Length: 460
Picture 1 (cartoon, helix red, strand yellow):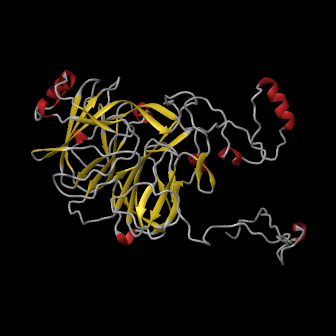
Picture 2: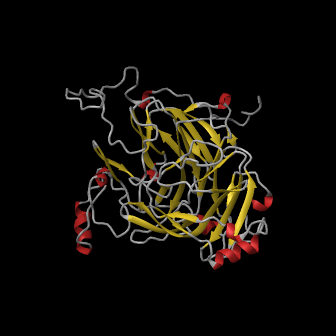
Picture 3: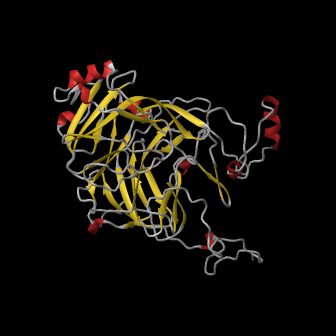
């Protein structure tokens, strides 16, 4: 539920704004809108200014704005927040306007935007507008292009939006800590002509990662690589919304990566084309069909496809560890290892010890083990046929016939037409036979090995 906190008149905001911008009157600061809900909000259609097709932010929302003369004005508040990663686990993070990531900002090509940034963190911050060409002093690099925004102060960023595309925002002050704590947000710039690059559904989400020990809620900001929670818009499966689309829709999915590794995002079913990066749109002659696209560190990608195949199509990072939750990196591999004697010994010290992994880890997907407070099972989630054994960066593109144009409600499991689901073979299975022509004994293969002699290079 979105609530409004009227910040007009608070002494800190007024004092900060007056000290920073002589072009902006303190009384003109727009109210800051905030939300504490991780539920996906309906697309925010424009009520004034140029028309555009609004985007859908997975488990998020777009920030309302107001016109003030020729300026489109927004108000971001950097502050500590609590974010539910999935039912059963909440993290204490830093973000914007009540959530991590912060709200999506939607501009139109040619807009003049004015963004107020109020700092309610315990330390200074700035905001970098990632991918934008703008006046150098608005680029948001603390110490290099502007003074830092001290706690309790409000700064103003003003620039003209030159081109449409896919962008993001994040701090450029104490960057390691502030981004590790969840400070980031998405920016979409729509074409001036609403019919240009038009799609029917346009989804956005940011990739981020956290290292949070079970039973705790604060990320370990010094972690370099061994993160245990891989998130889309600071949510993990099964807490990530499905991407619901109507059969025949042209669909765009925009993804930004603010983790410290690349992510090969793979879509089952429909083939897509990469149509944009944070550097601009990819011309049609340069596109090619794909089912996986690698999102580089600090990069953005827009992919597009026509949803012509009904079904529940998985979309996920193809690094298998990134589709797990709360993983213990030091767990030993026990596949094929009898644990009967080991179990007896361990239970003398830990009576509740449960041997696992002798036949693989799939059993974890269906069992419900006691867990510490505020954590999530590594493999979880159920579908209509059983456990999904997933976590982390995983969701589903649900393609359905007969949906209304603006219907994003989860339609439930796909009803497969009769005879279209994989099934168990009931007949006799013959023993494997060796393929003809392959020698039974590798030692019978004749090989000629030529060793270089002292004059072996004479003919080179």
